[in-house]
Image (cartoon, rainbow, N blue to C red; front, side, top):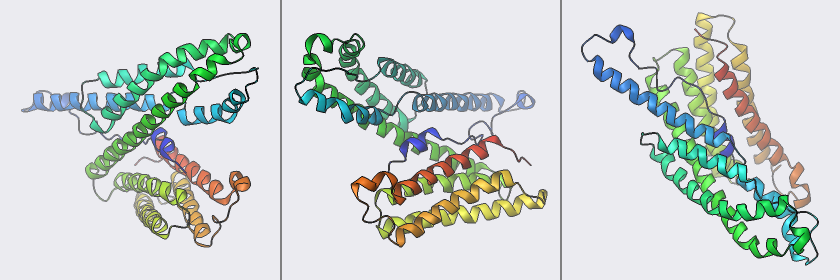
Length: 321
């Protein structure tokens, strides 16, 4: 199962880049100009990163769009019968993505993990756009009723090729966003004051993101013990950090912080249940007809949701000390 979109769209607010910025008290002290320059650069980094997040969270997953198209349209075109319905891809989705990617690329900060895939996705969308400019109005005006679907048949190979190029570029963009997010999360962990709730909180986020990455391999390769062990190691690390965080929180707040602890433990619980199910063979021998309701699919979706719940709980910041 591909978890890239979940990783891209669910980002944690950790105060990563602005925590070391200067303030008014330092403005007149020696070195203040250098600190202000650093603060400005950090602000630009945050602005560019947020712009890329907006691009990732806006618009469709183009693989879903193509999957919906291929479920119905090619068979209708291949039948040779006149079409009674037709659609391709939204022109608004393409133009919105291009606008947001261009906005992020224009911000003057070098972010190689995202700049290169964003440029590749911009090119792929640019190649798709003139194809959609013909097929979109063709579908909207029901041109297929006038020509029996001839235009759609002629342009289908170009459309599908262009969509595959966009899908590959979008996947690389999601991967780049994940890499940058982990860089930011690692920076928060490294900069946090050691042996504090915030330090262990950042460690939990870092471990959870690594577990999501190893979980992607685990769910896509059921029965592979190597991927099971890698996933298990990352989950055990997350569990250790949750225990450390909880112990530290209870020193300052004896009742703890259940609004954060509960989704942390649910994330770990869902992962460990999935590992148990994989090892006892629950993911094996699923027929194609039963794949939609399979234990593997159900566990993967539960794990994705528990990850989203964990990140959302941490973003709310219900427990601050």
